[in-house]
Amino acid sequence: MLPKTDPAFSYLIAGDDGVPRSPDAHRSHQIARVAADLPVEYRRALLHKTAKLDLGAGKKREEGWITLDSAEVVEPDILCDLEGGFIPLEDETCQEIRTWHTLEHIHNLMGVLNECWRVLTLGGSLEIRVPVWPSADVFIDPTHVRFFTLGTFKYFAKRDEKYEEYGRAYGYKPWEIIDGPHRWSDGDFAEGAVRMRPVKE
Image (cartoon, rainbow, N blue to C red; front, side, top):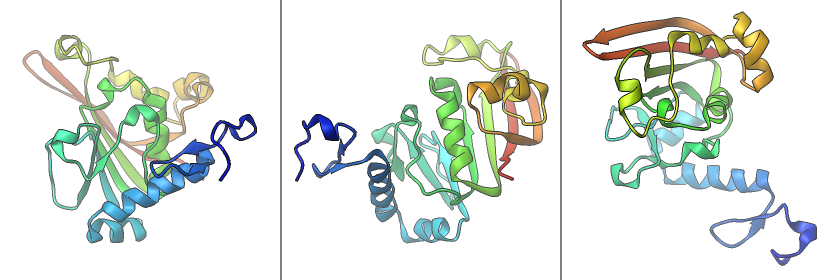
């Protein structure tokens, strides 16, 4: 085995089993480990590219949805910190992804959205729900690291001038907005919601 300290092989990553791998091989190893630990019905859905993924699910559970969260205490199907910008699933294996009140807690927004783009099938959809300005909830929660307005989603939509001028240059993958954005309010709380599909043609 090559020594991990050899500078000629500094690109190698030591896996949990101590075996050095290239970044791509390391990712493939992680994906295989995650898939092996999932219930058989979820593995079957991934194989048939019909999986449904709930990012930042917390304690929320709904039949048929694979849960992903960084908190071990909520016992998600996939324990994963999204800040790493990597969802440990194969390309184009999910038909639906939803993330409700998670993205406002994420520093690496582009990494997460681009990973959603990668794992969604052509024609698949991503549903986002976040608190939006001028809701007081946007600012009150000390774990919120970013703020959204309904206009934020324009930066991800391929047909919008905000994407053409800024989003593309920032590195966001292109999306098509298929529903919304909508805004609901209840007293001081306001929520924004949008459904998008990846543009892969």
